[in-house]
Length: 114
Image (cartoon, rainbow, N blue to C red):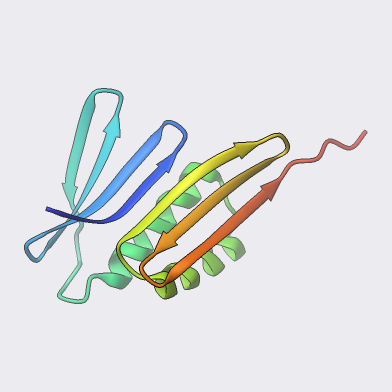
């Protein structure tokens, strides 16, 4: 299997891998590994994988749809293989995207107003 997307967001670790002509999704939970075939992916699996990655990012990070649309467009430009990591700072979460064609960051800032 060849890894095409690797996502690490805190406790969440998911990987999309190409196994011949089949795309597999692997999720690592503690010491367990859950693996499933991605349904509906054909020869050009790019759109299928990007859609699934964006859906899982939205679920894990609770991102609004408008942000997810921008992330989806950027992922297509960055290309595979793709690595997505979360870095926590004092008042911000930084999601870093690194692909074959470059890199990008999504910065979420937190501010308490009283």
